[in-house]
Image 1 (tube, rainbow, N blue to C red):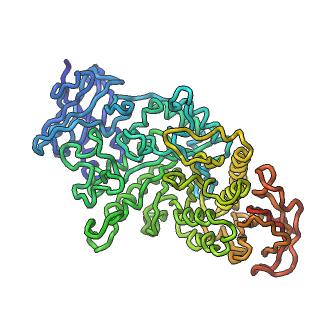
Image 2: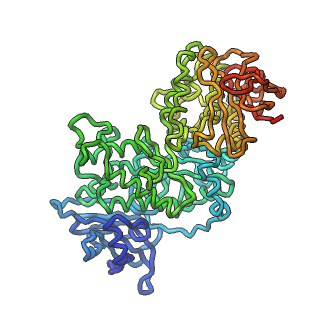
Image 3: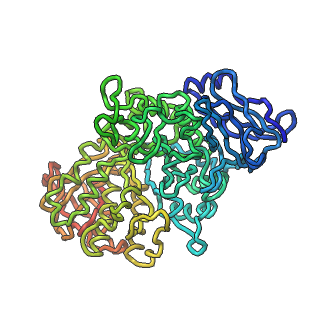
Length: 637
């Protein structure tokens, strides 16, 4: 059996960067790499295990026998073990058998940098490389425009395992199959981006992918790494961006994972108050350790560089930022200033975003952050965390609570639907109706709507119309676009059979039309993060449960008026203020018959009168459809 030969991909400069936490391309060095040494092809292995006294590569090539292929420890106190094993090639399964200096503890670990993993429940790493040829050059060259903060940004959130299944064969769809079905669907529905719940390898299906063990490997559930690249490529070729859920907040305790890696708290913080998550029974990264920060930032860069991702949605940022998150008094320790903020995390997130935007200025990072922590989406040079966007959890909570009320009571809760505009421009907000809102007994989005069936679908159209005309980018979880009745079930498939029924087909067509309206109406996106892009007409008509506002783009001629009627009663001759002498033309109405509505609306142009109203110099009388959002375009006289 060929033995381990001395070999290294690391330079002294690499080691210095790694130790200082400034190496952001570690995947080029660590892990398993197929190389040729002295004319012999084999695989170079490198793993970080500073507390180890011995590290062996065990795998199918040596019958998993410990000690047969021992790696060499570097002499520079980096804690890196490495070596070249001849004639070990692509497809070889392996792990690292680590004997620790700490009480001779032995661990058997998957490679943290593996490019491919075995299909769960198997847990070994696989030596892999691919020579995939990308065909998305046109998208990559021009994507800055599609991913810009003043571009339309409508996201379809997808869990690949349950979007659609081969029910007859009782199996997942493959990346290849999704590259046809999912890509065609998203394009047809006029979404601008897809967001995938974590596709990095994970051992436990009920975690939905949020408990990772293979940070550099697309999950093998749906195919090979190059097949996932093919899916990304197909999205790009069809003009659709892709955002990946990324989880730097915690990781599971599975025996083959990062926990207690070399018999010590290597990746996790050794203090349980900072290193253990009580809600998720998982371990928390040690953000104070340089090498761990390098690992995480390298991982973010990897998916953007190697897989052409257009953005990263960073999970559970609030849990990272606060030392007392989900902890009682006495279960956490204040920072050096006596506060509850995790200062190491703040530094890490700033460093992450600085590197991402320096290397990939045409992507977005999006924070799932549910608190009032300031300046999450502001640049680091003015003290912000540096994210491109932040989820608007307050809007989501208030809006769903409001829509859950019978319309007869809504007049007493007008503030719930208008309050978001008091802080809408403090961050670059994304409006999310995500997977978290359709599980654990919360009901589906449609299931939250009150009234009979007609009213429930009308309320749903109104909710979506309000979301699309509210400042901020948009995100909707799969199934909600056609009115899924049931809560999301990660083990099943969406209820596509519902599209045989008109109400569901109508709501699907409605969402498709909303996406088109959004993409073709500059006033809805050009100034979506600026107070200059929004002006109230009326927010205080509690009695009628009506709100109205103006959305503005770069050109005044593109401005629009939006009127929402949150009751099922038709309101004729309803007067709204108009800022200029003009005619207004209704260009969109959620109550259109094509969407399953009553068809009541404003078919003719309406001339604004020289009569002040709502603080505006002019006014117009319109008909308000029941439970509807109406959009009007100015026609200057």
